[in-house]
Length: 178
Image (cartoon, rainbow, N blue to C red; front, side):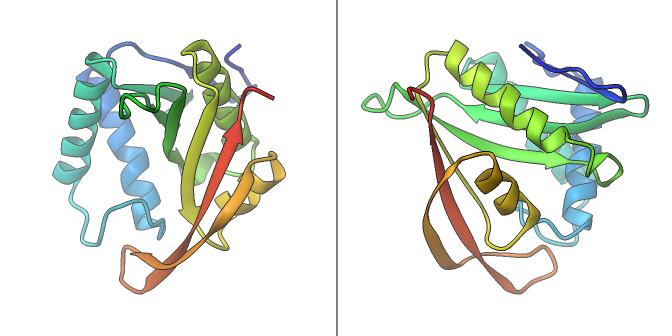
């Protein structure tokens, strides 16, 4: 079941059209501008955000990814992806990626709702194991731990923050078969 809230709803689009790509780019830009280490560095031009989401749209169209989108009265306010196309010896697994919440929608339970919806979608896709990585010490790490994800360990100096400076990354998994 995909949750609804008094201020936002979550849905799984089967196609990421130009309007949706534009809204998803807004969320990604907001997160990067807010300092989130989500693969991109400053300066982060809109065209790069659009190119990223167009690439994701191709993966959705090919059945390699599933995207959940949260929308409020102002438009797209959050998203999370499941990477479904993994090596043939891992048909039971998916990677959870790019869980992003616009700063205007934080602290309202949206991150938790996106995670629950992603777990439900993974089950519906026949997946029994999810894996993710996140910046160590951040809000997302605390969220995943609170939701019962199992912490595997920390990799020091794994990535950079958008303005520079390294950050450690914590790896988590979730066994959906339990």
